[in-house]
Image 1: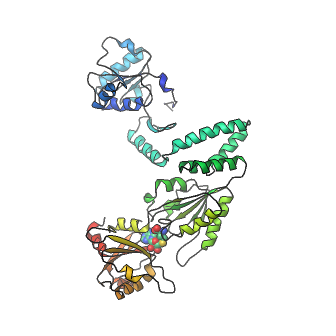
Image 2: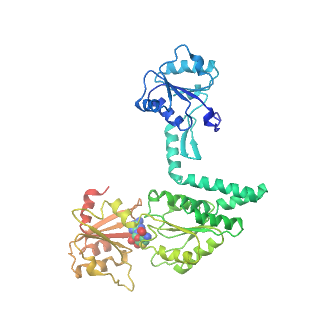
Image 3: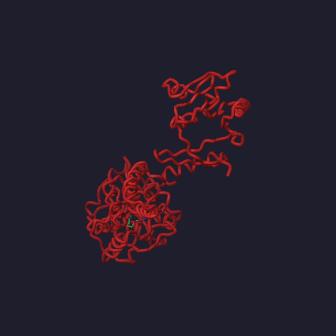
Length: 453
Ligand code: SAH
């Protein structure tokens, strides 16, 4: 490799930057985070550089002329907009044995600038050895998004923990073993979630040899993996063991670690592979074994997801857990179908109901559903949708009310069928529509024609 990544103590390093334009400004902006020993040499200055000079954050010289010896002891950045000038500056620097960085000439440079993610004291630097600045920026942004904004707090927490562990354990090997256990315990996530008290409790348990795991109840959204939250991805990647539903799409499962044990626990309406109380128990049992347990559910865990039941047992047994919301099917399907759930001209309220039929019937509060300017979203309704539309008409909803079925919403196979309450039965009979399907009833459905994308 041609470039050696080292961290230099910044207050020992002095810089002279040639150039007063945007390129120089960007380098100076980065460097001001690390040192005040910055001098800019240029007859003109970018407004932001001028601000820094006015605030006395950096020094400014118009030109060097004959006094090249002042470069001695500095790192030089040649960032003028003229490449011949930059090369000349580089020759001065080299003659005085000063390391130099030349804008747009990595081959002639002694050092180059990486992209930086700054979460003091944590710092991540990214470089493509100047081969592809666009790729470097892309990677930097990806890493930045994947990194919890509270990583600094975790750094501070582990730093003070390190002092405690040093005073209690002499043996280096024991200390390393303990750190492995601590970092795979719920401690890091608890600190990242702002629960330092609980994190301390976990640390004490791990140190005393009585560790317990943690459960993440995570909403996987309606199917498109791009709709996962950053937190969901972070937690999914950490799980030792995963219990997932039918509605969790394959590309989402691929975010799980290749070491994670994967268990399908069903949840198609007619296919309760694992009964609910067994799922609740499994989560608790595995956490007690010290594992990081992921319960991955379609959509949002707290919307027709029985997420509440799954964490009740954990709460009873004081097992640490976190709940991560997901984009619920109503939001995902309506956005991807171009059917806004509320709209000033059509609907001022929206109501989510489940159309799950028990014994071929459902006890929905029909009179409340027939509300003008209200959108109705029916989850789990496909098998009963003909029954439900008839019942809505019987209770007074106009047979012409628009209705949409969104099949496999947000996925590449998504299909949207629109009709009216009176005719939807025929649409279902003449198309082979398969679950999952979400039903939207109300005037907002008229917007689909114009807003589909
Ligand atoms: N907790 C989930 C809902 C679980 S109930 C959530 O918040 O979305 C399961 C029902 O959700 C399905 O029967 C269907 O009506 C709806 N659903 C979930 N994902 C869907 C998708 N991708 N397309 C259409 N409907 C979906």
